[in-house]
Length: 298
Image: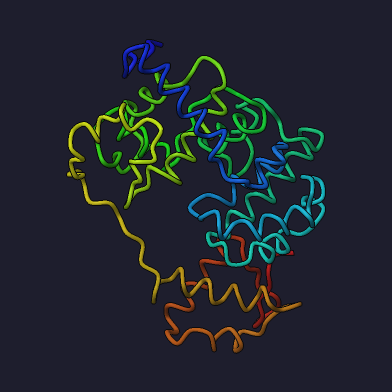
């Protein structure tokens, strides 16, 4: 495989690495999955942080690890309890997948999160990004870790673009590979994420506080606006997702099965409500109990 050409002269690339890592040493947030970078803690954080801001994850993450400090502890409990503890983080199928991953870790890896990328990828709910992140942050692996923040930082600094493409391209992955430092790649991954989260933000970048502003090609080009395909926006009010959330909230707050008439009260549109409930059952998030009641999976 041919290595991508360096996006900067060697001297600038060295400065880029040094400055970003030095900035990270001083500016990084004190986050619990950084204080405790055990493989299980990192894995839980990566599942929860998918499409969810840090502020919403923190309380759920901390209570989750208090209750289930290891894969074996979670695997011994029911998937329904995982869904209940997930609360209002959204995308609750992540809770089921994390539970299934814990079961697989106990069954195939002696209860320890495996370090090998292929073994991580074989776990339920673990895709290429999550596997690379767990390997990097828990095992100091050298991988490209491309979340939304990192992609935006690289697009601006190296390509002079306000925003990256709507989905990861092979050229973008090649650029990220070329930017990887020879050592401390795991810290580079965390530092570039933090730079995107705190400084190189999507809407109001704080360029005067950026440690590599003088190396940024987007800044040098005069901050040209993004002219690519329109980026999708997610609605919420009145959607099936909102309806599913209302139904799940009733089930989470109940100690046992909930009768169908009680669920009918939470959403006025009967057709949409039935579609949402059928979807929850199909996704394994809800189980029918008898002829007219429903519960979280046992």
